[in-house]
Image (cartoon, rainbow, N blue to C red; front, side, top):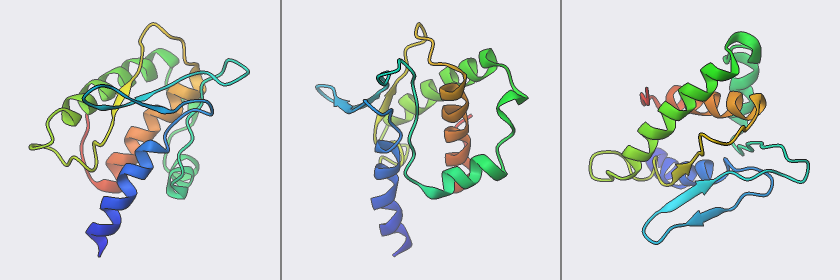
Length: 133
């Protein structure tokens, strides 16, 4: 029952990690998560797992703990590893890595977005006991 719950919730969790205006855009072969700005030009991540907000308030370090450049470099590394695992469903859980993440390093997503994305990966590591780093 627990595995069935995880199989249903994991893809929903990753599809929920989108901006206000973002939709997951399927490529020819893969599902892809692409981030787009809202009306104000800001990028944001919405995660529909209530445990994520609890994680941000209780476990995650404050936003000012690391620099924006640190968050950006770590997020690029996390996204690279994530997308590699997405492309290898026989080696890694395809339900956990259900979508690829399209993060453009040339776009300035802002500190809030970088902080939330960084802690999203940390939250996944913490909650599902996987190591993405």
